Image (cartoon, rainbow, N blue to C red):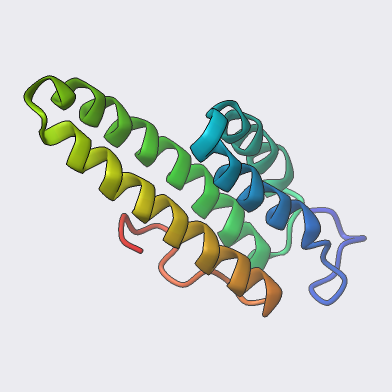
Amino acid sequence: MNQSVTEGSANTSIANIIYVLYLLALFNGITAVIGVIMAYVYRDDAPEWLRTHYEFQIRTFWMALLIGVIGGILTMVLIGVVVLLALAVWWIVRCVKGIRYVGERAPYPNHLSWGI
């Protein structure tokens, strides 16, 4: 971990940018890929509380990709539309809550869970 970054002076803008990129991905998709790459790059040098956000963002990306593929396949039997809509709501709630916790300079609780 980079010793020049202290708990109090941690730059939260990168984590917030990733959350915004994730929200923009609902319209274009590619910004989520940029966001997950950024999360991988910044995770190791972040203080512990901020690292929970980067790990959360990485897990959110991979879980959404998996559920999105399953939902895409299931659109052939129409249930996929419901899965994809639920995925969009799940994605938005996770991002909004993440932005809130970053603003409070608090770790994301249960950042390794699949839930909201």
